[in-house]
Amino acid sequence: GAGVSQSPSNKVTEKGKDVELRCDPISGHTALYWYRQSLGQGLEFLIYFQGNSAPDKSGLPSDRFSAERTGGSVSTLTIQRTQQEDSAVYLCASSLYPSGTQYFGPGTRLLVL
Amino acid sequence: GQQVMQIPQYQHVQEGEDFTTYCNSSTTLSNIQWYKQRPGGHPVFLIQLVKSGEVKKQKRLTFQFGEAKKNSSLHITATQTTDVGTYFCAGIQGAQKLVFGQGTRLTINP
Picture 1 (tube, rainbow over the protein chains, first blue to last red):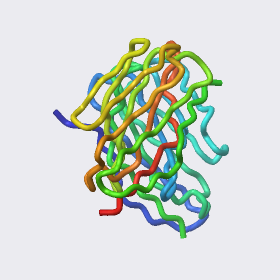
Picture 2 (picture 1 turned 60 degrees about the vertical axis):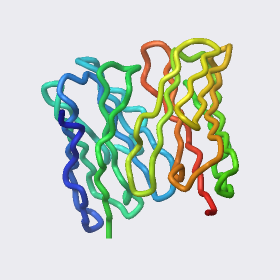
Picture 3 (picture 1 turned 90 degrees about the vertical axis):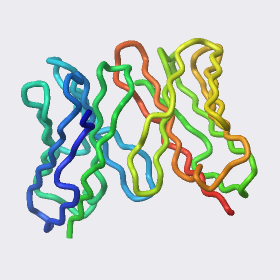
Picture 4 (picture 1 turned 180 degrees about the horizontal axis):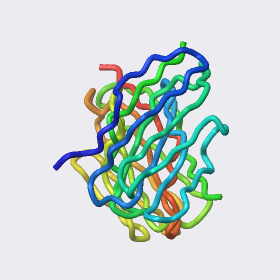
């Protein structure tokens, strides 16, 4: 079956612009995670959605970052007024339940000039 | 909150040498998962350990879960160039979110 998909695969933007990153999780997966990974670094947790519960936003680095998950499926991560330090790969992962195997998407590589 | 620490951060070995990465949690874990991320790729699930003291093997890879369910290790015997990548452990406490360690980046000299 289809895995986790993310779009766009690459995004180049100018400092100060807003960007939206999309994640399509595996159908039926209740848990959805967003991570940020800078070059050669580990996975930085950003936000976690589980079912209809309020999202865990504890990893969002600033109020310029926000995310939503519509209808328990597709999720959008929005970064407002992008800064150069926002440049990274943004990974989305979904799992059938919170403790289940996470399936990662290919990521969106964001470059802020 | 729950933290998962992983060491070493980097490891460089000669092809054929063994490799081990260690994962430690500040709290008891319900389970621990291991992932591998190849250079330029995304993390891919390797295995999940659930039981105290559990040991699982996948060919040259041996995974262990500690008796107290607070630590885990991944050991690779006789590394090959295909083993290059970053290995992440991830643990979960109860019904909380999965928490990843910082990863161990393995490089191999052929």
